[in-house]
Length: 148
Image (cartoon, rainbow, N blue to C red; front, top):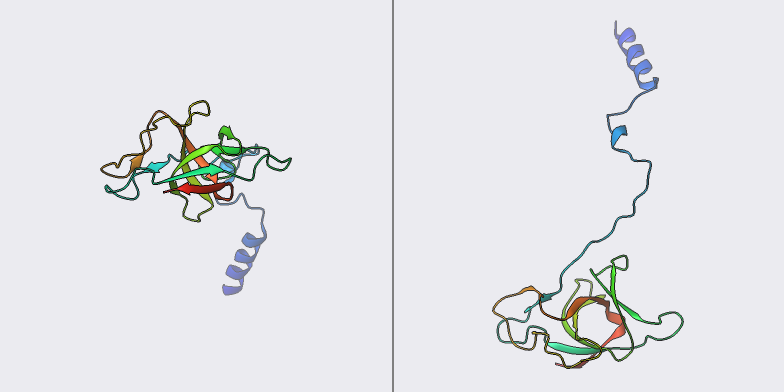
């Protein structure tokens, strides 16, 4: 009886299986994943400091390898490009990614770099930026802080 049970188990293990029911979930078409959008947070320094405590400028772009610095919707290379920044573009640095590779910035318009973007004064609590200027994420390697 035990040998018959063992034989049945062996045959069942070797038989053609339809799997565990996951085949319907497999899709033959490939769709690239995108990181979506991650808003820039302001006010991380607390209520005693400016909402975006640092001013920076774009550096080291303009060659064939890196003709511009993309402002991205999230701190990932795959995130959507929102804007293209050139050397010396002024940035208001508000936050950074955990790995320090990305800066969350607010960008005044190129034709009016002294525009009030609403981040010079303190805010009561940390929140997503929702002001009049563009905001997004840039690679830290291309940002040099110029003022606190």
